[in-house]
Length: 450
Image (cartoon, rainbow, N blue to C red):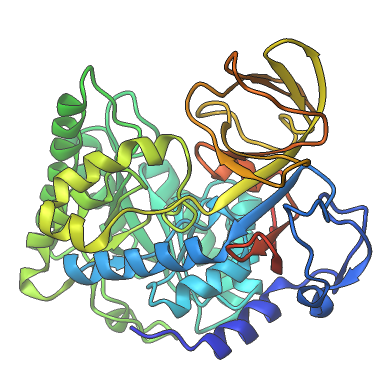
């Protein structure tokens, strides 16, 4: 796969939509500016050109992570439909599609609309679509674009009946369905073989309104007492998905698009998908035997690989490297954190404590508080890496409490760079995020649509 950077630049700029300029009403923006003129201003984070806090993405890390995943899926022989809910940025969706991704995954009808409105032509809704209004939105997308390749999940006879009746009533083309497999104590998905059998029988009875195109699951929430036990439980869950694929294939329940007379023509592939951002290597390994007959496409859905993080995924990555083996791990290296939040010291009210201009309105904290990674002195201009003795131990809406080692020295006006854990819940706090080069100079901007 090769990337046409000129085409990507054109597509991603067109994908922004929204206003063509930024103003000081936007977080992190120092003055009104046209987006087309943005790079020419040469705003630099370290020079204090931006109001703090400000969120930035390092272009070099985005490029590295993109190349890393392209190499991984090529080595594993699988496809990728990254979860768009991570960034909800059409700019980045188009970069991922240009990098060879099979499609874009979303979680809601609204997110599917955003993707479709911005030119994404293959959308996987990795969720059940229930309720009249949500179903109407999804079927409306099928009517609006006969070429749209769209999929959604079911995990119950009730959900199947809702979709079946709606497709018949609205006379849309058939809706592509993936049967979702779940696990006890988890999220959605069929919990046992009895429920699976009931669901596939219900789908078979729907005629051509719903076509079963594959099997899906999500292993990321599985947790056990030890890492080894967790990996064993993940493996057992993935094996159940494989068994369900085999069962449905033997019964002839999969309905290739070409056989259903749909306007999109479609393909005869059976889709099998799982893979969050922690165990996607296990998904590729467990599902690979399914591809031996040539009729199965394995699709990973990792959404956080592109930006990675400084927390959960950073800490879990050595385990992934161990599982893929030393040769591939050495060839690929590791993913790099791309998302950074820069803040400024605004107060030092007591020894060992600095208050930063950043809080819950700026940084996600569902998977741990942000981690200090860099400090920049306003006096010397020196940028210093920070170790684990520096920590954020509390956040208010607009403040972060930075605890420092006894020997540390900071001044009001010094800059602190923070990394986040689980980037999804930081992206949704920013309507726009600057892209910067390795010198922290702003070169571009993305918009988010949460």
